[in-house]
Image 1 (cartoon, rainbow, N blue to C red):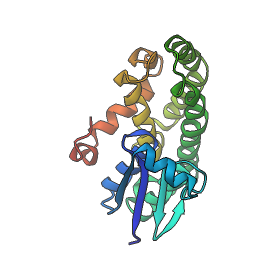
Image 2: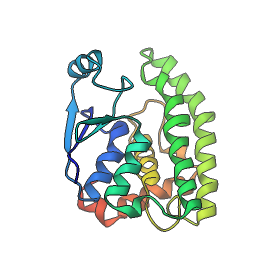
Image 3: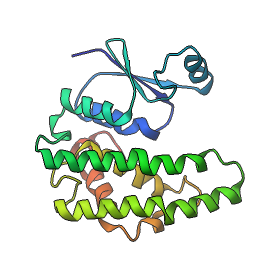
Length: 207
């Protein structure tokens, strides 16, 4: 087994699905949690290939891109987290890209907006636009697969990311977004419930 070191801020964010994938797969890794001054210093030194985190070091080789890291973890650990069937893998990849690129990219500007009213307006636009498109699309994928997960009965890395997003919205930590925004997407919400009920996730004490 390679020596792994995952670098990210001291919070859930984009790294949390990777941490969960590693832990439920029983893969040992160093959970390197960055304070912002350390992140800024390391970024200035060129420690992060794309200037951002998460970054996974594999025997010292620094690798970027969340979805790629998740697929790697699934391949070396709990292989059920990434389907071998080409169509099921396509569903997982499409869901991952929709969440990591379309939704996260659209949400990013509002995370840095300091004006409370502007932030709420941006979140309203997000909910009516990119979030509605992504969650509506994922509803259709889940309907096709039969659920409860994106590719069917087995939890995948896409479900780890989707569940984390649903739980974050429900928590109320994102101003202007709440569980009410998820009401039109019952299958998407059900992914979070199935994730929380998974014995491996239960064993980690996740809520």
